[in-house]
Image (cartoon, rainbow, N blue to C red; front, side):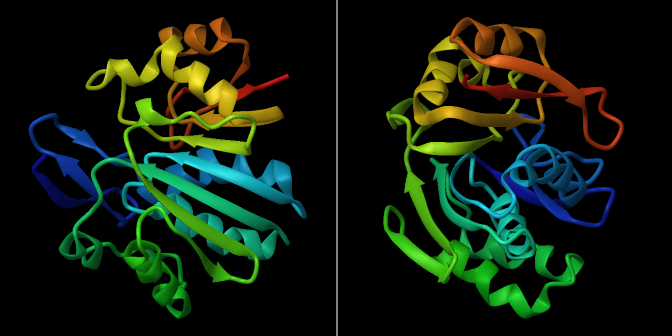
Length: 220
């Protein structure tokens, strides 16, 4: 897939898959979307806890990096696993400007390490944050009751509808512990119905940066 670096409205970079016209983050603001969807509606529910977190679509590493920054403020211990089938190149990573825009220049080495660590190995980015990057397709996920929180950040259903089906959400449901949460930027009715069909209790929440809705699903 041919990709190019572009800028979103808050000045943060993202990638565009030219053949699809699809972006890794909202064009209204990559950082703003990440905070609204995954931090405020997901991570903050687990303040001062030890949690196991799965990201569906590690991509640029923005969600993982922001989670690293926020876990220190929220006094959390995080075991983070990110699934990705098409990793970024070193050249693409070098063009991303997240540490600078997040005023986290002192953590730039962490962002670089996040991308340079070996795949399929667990590494410690700090005493309270471990990372395992999983080089696999989403359809290969077969975890059983391991995670407290899932960031579901797959490409949109308009370009990859197979990632928003009952089959995929059944895998997500099985991967979560009882009481676990899945958050996603999406709000499409077919995705909500697929989540409900496999057992999730789903709620609509205000979307990011002017988007009307997003979804949060709970395994009860």
